[in-house]
Image (cartoon, rainbow, N blue to C red; front, side):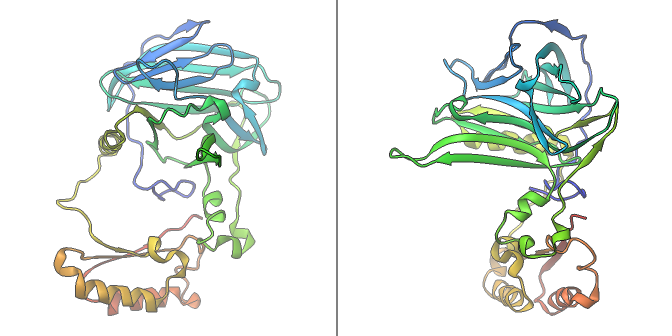
Length: 350
């Protein structure tokens, strides 16, 4: 995915959707079902959880709750004593549909949690977004917002496909965690979470990033202020369920193109990208060797893009500071490489 904002890293996703035509919500005390041609979403008034499943099946694919890490402690929607559900219609750039807002309240000295879950009438998918709302008299610090947490028996091993993808990257990075346990009949999924958070976690846990061996002041834990009366949202998370995984990917791509007005090139971009090949071990020698080989053997076949992608562990002045040597090295690669389309991308997180 993508890194474009200081606190977000899911590339090329910038929200421009405009919501319209919201009807007056109707409050309910019982469970609410949201359906379209493919999905059945069921929301529990008892604990505020929701299920995602295929329409026409006897059991959902998973049951989930929401959560937030506030002042370095996790609070879950199921911890709250009160859950209020309202339903309404909506219309945005992807079409019309129905949505439910679930608000969890009643914990003293804690912000309220709410989420809006939606399904489209003429699209085979839906989305969910979580809000942390501070109605208390004091300020909080928010480290992460979790739009989905499913654990253990809440996940059904259906052998069908359930798809999740970030629709926005306005502020935060969307991280997916899938936990599995080995067994005699193969691995079993034991947990799945989707968090909107900062960039440090994914870099610090990636052995190839080198961030753990770098300066400790680069390992900055996200902590965003939430003042009294303030609200903070996760990124929008698209979901789909069914047997056709390829169609789910196609629908996700179409939604991204529509929401973010993506420019579609005349042909596919073909070439070499340093990050997936070398990660943080890029040097002038191995980069220039690959550029020469690509130009000699693959350029006639259309592989004419050479992309140098670097900078995750050098998030401050390093990439532009000539004293580090990296600025000089990258200039040398550009001016000495064969006549091809060339790109240098310095991805910084500070």
